[in-house]
Length: 372
Ligand SMILES: Cc1ncc(COP(=O)(O)O)c(C=O)c1O
Image 1 (spheres, helix red, strand yellow):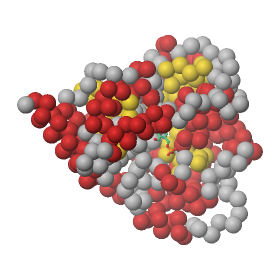
Image 2 (cartoon, rainbow, N blue to C red):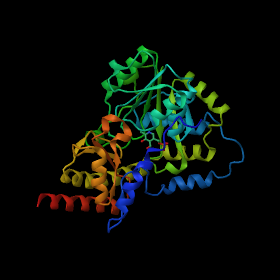
Image 3 (cartoon, protein in one colour):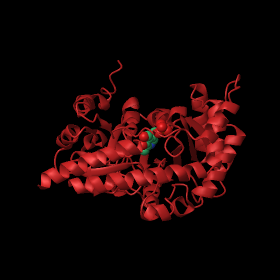
């Protein structure tokens, strides 16, 4: 009983966090991707205004919330013409990701595919229902018993962005297998370099999935772009029949998003300004950290969008985690995200300007000492 999942991996980081805390300047924690900037006041005001909520909220989502998602997809994601019945709210994305295989009725004998470098909740979902997890980016290698495929663009931990042809190949293969293609897209408004100019494609984009949304599901969260991680504000959009089935299961099992949070999401999605402000804050932090990480000798991989730098010193990740802890910096070992990451670490840019500057200073000083 209760042993389907191992101990939460972050426990293994605690000794390194303790070591980092011994640094005379204190620890700089760049491990967790939890936003640190204030929730924008427009959103706080919306929550205050929505605080009278005596009745149960709609599991499928209020009309106002669903209209806001439809409008946002058309305005920001290049996906026009969605219907409200294609949308449902979730209690943050992580719960949907973790429970989706079970809600789909998957179990032993079924395969769930995830990226080679994968956010940790996909494997949890497979484990909770006893399905097999396959870490494979190449659609040609997805096995015939695949029932659910997770793609994650922009990716956590590696910041990898899938372009239209790549996403389209994934959709085509999933359809061929009769599998659901779920696309986790929560960093789509946080692109850098090429992806600051170009639209980061959604799986719902007609260039990706054609005119039909059959067999595809886009999963989105406002935790990052709107500093709403504490509110648990997210949603999923897909083919109407799939959404109807999921809402039914979620209604039975009490997975309904609080009404005030649905109201808040409608306000947050309608306001581009606070997202632009936050994007600029992260862009500056990323520039500062990226330069110092490179100066120290790290090689960067992908890291084209999102809130992380995926970096290697060409050695085992735990050795690098320890090296960073000696500088008082806490980073995540890439092995947490699968074997492919065993020589990588993940730096998060979700720390205050001061903390990011301090980390950069320590990396540069250490690089200078190494050189001398
Ligand atoms: C790729 C990815 N998906 C989903 C989530 C979960 O977001 P939330 O549960 O806050 O909506 C995260 C959070 O870090 C993430 O990185």
